[in-house]
Image (cartoon, rainbow, N blue to C red; front, top):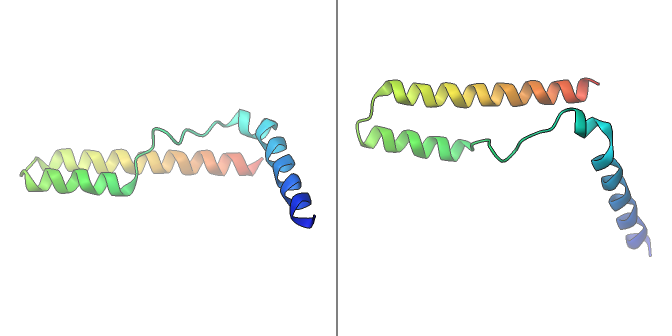
Length: 80
């Protein structure tokens, strides 16, 4: 019985959080973010094919910018 009550409470809290203004003001886009594993695989492929280092540094800079933007959005979301 306690488990059912806790489960119901968790579901209610999740529904409330999903409908709150906090999530609608700062939508987070997880679909477009790249993982570090994907990035390192791409870097490895460029190195194996003797690709230009400029392309590798551009990929790393893009990843750094993506992470920084996500961190700023996260900080702004929880600062409110």
